[in-house]
Length: 224
Length: 204
Image (cartoon, rainbow over all chains, first blue to last red; front, side, top):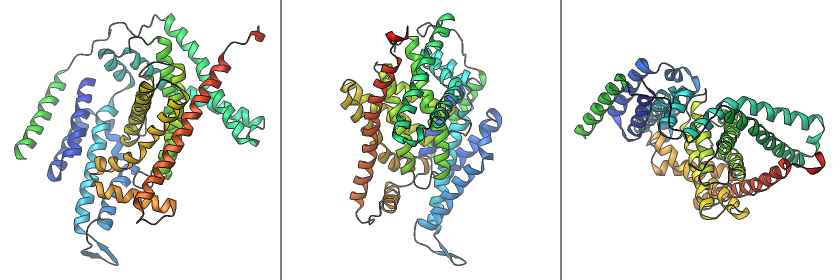
């Protein structure tokens, strides 16, 4: 599947998650899981994160305890069936929304995103994003070195001066680094206004996905 | 965007990376301490304040329309591409805050007061964010989201929950004050860095 397919999936699934209720939310979750298993195994890793399940379970538990009138006893605890149903729906919405982003946008690699921006005529933005992603580690290291230098020179004894010095030095070092990057980009004849060079054609799988999503939306609209 | 040079795009990428680094490191720590369903106020104040300061400092070095929004877009994409999985709330907050700052800077040209107002307005978004996002993410009703914010506020401020409007006003005032300080800080930071980067005659 091309990056367009993944983008289409998120663009479709995110509003659907916000608008669906009851069994349609369950249906959406099943469609997303099927998409994940077939096209986006990487995005499905989210389901292995304990924090994600904690968030989902918290919504269900809080719903049962905090929403609606308590009408069921569970030992010493009083729960609300109405609240439990509302909590379940809240959890379902959070689940489908998280999958919509993780299976679609979250599955795109950096080069996919750069290629999409390139095709959309936003070459500069793709370049800036790739640059930012690749320099994250370097900038974090520069910031750490600056902090250590200030600390070793006893600067932390005056916290406000140290903070001011830290911020100025970090931003100034970042901007000094900028000149080297500009030189490197110019040497490679990078031009943000040049026409797109990388073709990014639609694939057959994208069309199948579009048919499935249109069919699901049609069925939803027909029953409402 | 056709007027942007390679130098401008590199600067946008670097400031986006700086904001992204803060979101990914400090943000992860704060979101671990305060998970999404608990108090999000402090997380918003700290991350929003630093983010606003970085984005507005970036405007000093790319004094073109749209540069703050572009820094926000790069940061949001870094957050989307981060290994910890997609976090919808912070991504929306980053984008809206950068759009609000850009609107102010487009109306009032880059000046000290424009930076202060831009920072305050961007941080002011955090309260509507706390009310709107639970509705979108969890399908909570507006009343439930409102009650949650009031409960959190009353616990944090030590005020009675019946004084709901006062609690909201105090929370908004705290957010906007932090934003205004961040905006003023960004103005001074940008100028201080620009002074430091100027070549000095005595160095030759």
